[in-house]
Image (cartoon, rainbow over all chains, first blue to last red):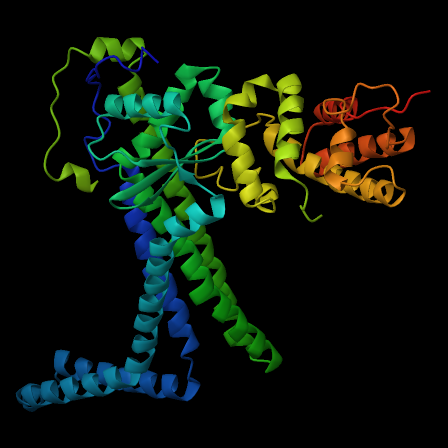
Length: 317
Length: 159
């Protein structure tokens, strides 16, 4: 307990946060993949063979006009370029009109997926607290732990410490969750028994690791990943499977193949990329924890280096 | 199994068992027993965290408190049934008193005090504790220690 009460020491090291973290970049790519995936699948839902054929004829017509403009046969043709240009624009407008319903379906799919993801993200902390049976750690219940956690927060230098909650009959290691501005670190009875009453150094390192997730901005990204996964599954994959079943019954195999292909590829990319986000954040949390713990020789050697960041845009990443 | 037994009595015996098998868990026992009796059904869901992939990792620690409380609640349900039969037979008037008297801790020291449980019933309780502990993912050696500790607290008939 007395060790944790020591004043926090700022230890610099080679700056691993000099560039936007892999977590952020992978998260941005995941968002792009979800936009593409849900847009693509909802575009597939608006399947109209007749309209597609008309649109394709329209487009080929436009191309023939464009060819006429680019390769005039005679000087008279060249004079007509202006007239043809106007006709081309009108044709393009006509083609766009035919394609518009499909685009609207795609946009609706994207908006619906992100809307549902936002609802899941918003409700998750409350659900987690209730389902996990977590309650706030009070000083009267566990005075020693409350003080220890306060000391650890001081070491981390987090300006707005999270709410520490616990479930005395649950097992497992701590978990940070919540949403921007309202973070929680959930502890379990088994964790407190095992580490606080035993290996306090490990207790501190594990709590610092969870605080590092909060400091790195990982918690929001983590639960956006989970929300996007769930929303994509509910809003895009499940309806796709229903459409596939319906098409199988109606023996529309070409369309079924397109849908299954798109489903497998989109779901695979989104699932794997989400996992990549979750994986990357662990690396940065460990790096941040090592900065705070400052136990290695490298840290000691780098302690003398000047602190060259942060900049204003840094917290975004 | 419904939990209609007296929580205080379960807590007292559970505290005894834990003091013997896992004394390090005693500091959180008051909070743990409160949480358990607030929602006994939740204990099965909460004994293993499903979010280990999102948290620090997977913990292999054998945590006894969330096993002892439901296991003893089940034992008390059985003891209550035995006590009801004893009350019908006129051995005593109050069922909670009969249940309390089944434990060495509360059993009267007077030599003529009747014992309610038979050896067969104690063996049955031992088997039930083993099965319940297994259901709650307790390792076999810990489950056996728990079953022994629980039955050691029951009054064995003489002879």
